[in-house]
Image (cartoon, rainbow, N blue to C red; front, top):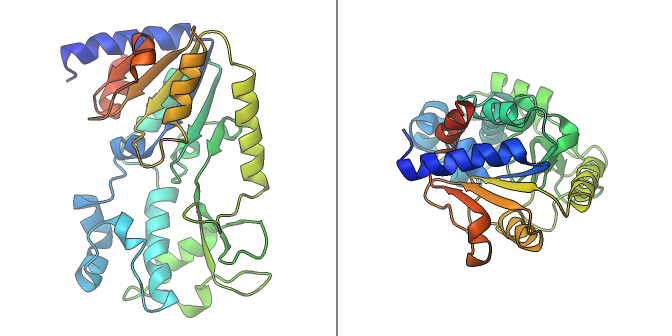
Length: 283
């Protein structure tokens, strides 16, 4: 149940969505957490209890940095991580609720999430920009070229055939051009590959923003923290400030705030995103 202040803000957000000429959604890790894609606790123990016992890993995030001794062990970890966070839909229908609220609206989504849950929920691909990569793609670790590779079929086999936290050696992926090990297409350093699809999505997002610099635009931020505020949060604040007809909205449990310069045109919900979307559906 949302508190009274949040109920008032929720009504303001419902009105803002209904009257917006365009909606720019910025989604961070908090949205997937609200959808049940938690990286620690019961879900981690259920899916990775064997890794926790053998290696002392305590959550899915830190497990991605563990120095496994062999590629067979590393890909046993990563294949399971990819499968349950990329190819299996989120436990809750949070993303589908968001899509229902956006139906019929002129919208675009920018996300730092790499779990592909937007498309699994039915969002059109041409309205999405995955800025930081995709769990479903591999790239050369060097990289020797700027292509990425869909990993669904190999990951499926890795999950099915791994034994004792090791995958068969023949499934360990190598670059088809130079033979070096493949790695995840995730932005962690300067080796991140921005392939043709990435650049096309970036261009679509830029064009969407350029065409909507004025008018009643709603910048809707969902679950964005302060790890990479320059991607979503700061640009949303700046664009709201520069467009006097724009509104900034933030739903983030424990981190909903806005600078004084746009506070009178901001809607701030310190609440669980899934609960807030439930409330919006009833408005």
